[in-house]
Image (cartoon, rainbow, N blue to C red; front, side):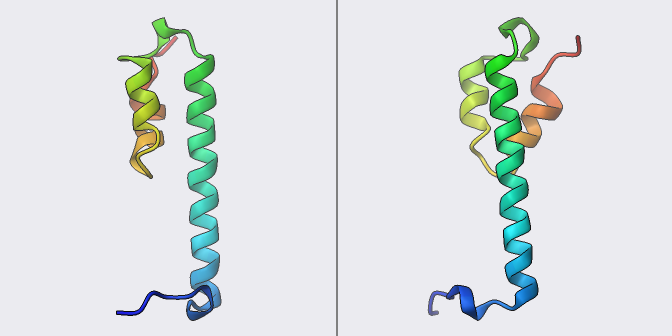
Length: 72
């Protein structure tokens, strides 16, 4: 099976890929900034483990934002 080129995708597929990539980038950025700025006492588990987990797309950032932060 030949590797698809960008031009092989329909305009709708291209838009979906761009939107998906943008959402992943934004979610990852939000999670990393929050993880770096938040005090360790407000994070569930080790910060380093969450930092690695955030790079597992798309589950990592969602998991950190939903489960990794303690409620103030």
